[in-house]
Length: 331
Image 1 (cartoon, one colour):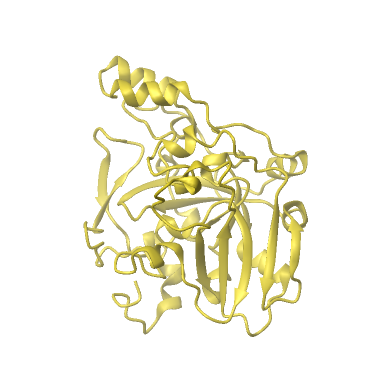
Image 2: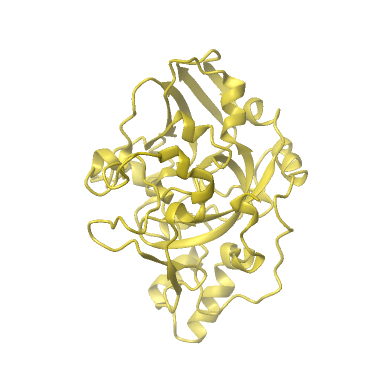
């Protein structure tokens, strides 16, 4: 049985914890758990969170998605101290976990197109509809493990990346797939910062066999609806056995290349962020341990600490990809 079917229903981050800011923060304030400045800042801003502005072709496809597990249920009330909603890394909108939700209001994900280039039979600029519409939308409930040692379980909606790769027909010369995030400084304040934390556009990459693996996923939705802006609208990568920074958001370009691409965090600090970025509890980040993780919901006040699993719990499916490799060297 695939690992995404092994995740128990109680592990899934409750949709209300994922989406709701106001009710959660108000409860936390009532108990004195959330700093007033943080809560007021988030409550003031609507950002892009939860806004359903996707075209009808996508919303209709999402409604007909094939579930990979039992339907997501919401039988438990969110813990009052939880502030998962808006807890996200998307540096294009800022470096604070609140920034993607509060600073993405000006971002326009529709209409959307993706440039395809390199060692491929069908290069060109494609409307997202032309790339996604031929395929069946699936639901995948995956663990998400951040390199910062926190994690969530989220139900994504989308298509296997290999379905799109088969559609585009890369040549035998294509050994890697390079992805690039959209570059729109006027809509993404992090990209126009005077001293940005990283170089833009954001670049990520996968070896071809990683890209073709059945677990590798292109998400266009979450929790039964299209992706919100802070989660990578309108399309993002999800590679569940790798640290979250590999799962590039708001993809604008896909290149099929012969040589291993230089990725954004690798260029920024290769000592701390390698190309492979496989979840590995025995290989620590230079500044913190990766042996355990903080599972959300649980937030800033009493999150559940649990041991980190090799390949984020997907070793049975993906360990063969790295047979014979030194995973301390190729981290």
